[in-house]
Amino acid sequence: MSGQLDETRRGERLRMVEEQLLARGITHEKVLRAMRDVPRHAFVPDAYRSAAYEDRPLPIGHGQTISQPYMVATMTAALDLDQTNRVFEIGTGCGYQAAVLAQLSEEVISFEWVSDLAATAREALRVLGIDNVRVYAGDGSCGLKDGKLYDRIIVTAGAPQVPPEVRAQLADRGRLVIPLGSRHHQEITVLRRIGHDYEEERREGCVFVPLQGRYGW
Image (cartoon, rainbow, N blue to C red; front, side, top):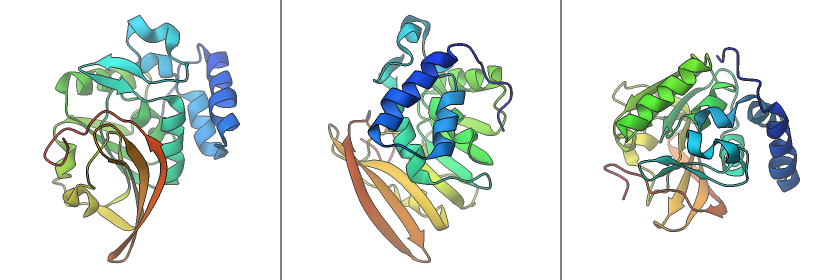
C-alpha cells in the first residue's frame, strides 16, 4: 500500500480531476481519489514538471511518455479494481500508472522494456513510500514466468494483438485492458474472462506509444 504521498501541488491535482476527469464523465470515486492523491509531478522529468498537470502526455525519455491524466483514469476505471486484486502491468514507463493502481489494489507487478526507465520508476515509487509495486526490466509481452494468474492486467502501450501468454495469465472473472490497433491509432479494449471464454469490448480511440517486445511492434 502507499506510504506518505507528496502533498505539494495538491490544488493542481484537484483542478486536474475537476476539469479533465469529472468534466469528461469519469465518476468512479476510488479512481478520482487516487488521481487526487498521487503526485504526477513526482514522475515527470524536471524539464516538464511545470506542465505535470496539463491535459496531455509528456516526454519521459527514451521515446516514451507519461500518459495524459484522462487516459490513466479511463484505463484504471475500466479495470474495476478492488483492494484484493493482484495486477500485472506491461509498460511501467515512469511509474505513474503503477502508483495509481497501487492505491486501489493489493499488489502490482510491472514490467518495463527500457531498463533505465524501470530504475527511475522504482526510485520514484520508493521516495513516495509506495511499497506494493514491484518493477522489473524485461519483455512483459511474453507474460510472467511465475505460473500465477492475475485478477487484472493492463497494457499501457499500443499493441497489434493481445499477447497470448499474457491473456493466459488472466484469472477467471478477471479483466485485461489494452490499447489495440495500428501503430498510429488504437482503441481501448477491455477483455473479460468467463471460464474458458473471453468477452471483448472496444471503447474509445487513443494513440499510445508502440508496445515493444515479442508481441509488440
